[in-house]
Length: 387
Image (cartoon, rainbow, N blue to C red; front, side):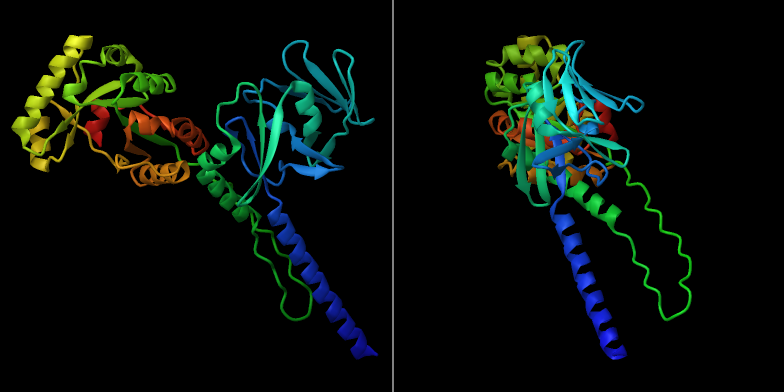
């Protein structure tokens, strides 16, 4: 009987281990990322959305402090929680009754759920009241819940997932590291020693990155559209000396500080020919916009030519990544940019190719930059000299 009892205990223990393993696997498959418009939120068990009673619940932390314009207040004494937008546009949730009422008298059956210190709201009720929309998409690591309002950009969910792919991969890796703790297995009999649980160090914030964008202007109208999507000074537009005559409006906007102009010249014939092209380009630039530039990109030149051009008072640009032959997907593009920046003290200079090529990726690329703690910077002579 004793042997049968021992065998039964062993079998039950094995079943329990299998059950725990299946639970862990299921939990890993139910990871939910959250994005609001084009902002991707951190991944944490404490604030992860979940389904309950057929409704998707999201934490209060994703409903405030963003461009949705929604604010959150919780009164622990009255057991009321409020979401409001503007002075008269709000809804009050009663934690004791599970009902909600808007300031204009609408009522909802909307029970809230508290997990730890975090309050979770039924997303369908919130979206219906504040005229929002949301989507749920299966991704490599689980699901992406994306909440949107009328101010959202033009990125589709597929484009956003592509743009934020590297950021989601990084945050998922951090999430898995934070969840992994060594298991203490006592050996032999006797009293199990007291073990202090290991303290998981906080994960460092993603390294700040700066990218300097170069775009060759081939069609002034298209370049001006790009310029309108960027903050002042966030791109350098390259011009062939013989194409400046038709770009007067764009050149004047650049001269006014909306961006920077640089000359792209063929330096394969040596320094003397390169300098002649630069001087011709600056004459055309002066005629069009009363401005000149010292920034030049030398094609086909060697170090000796670059040195001679620099000694003549110009600033040859050095490109860390050249996508002039074609741009990869946004995920691969930004992953390469982040890697180059991380390897170069947080910054890199990138040639995106022509304005036509850049227009196809700009919006998704900027979204990916924001998710990856990266921002386009203004390239100037001091930065070039320090590189």
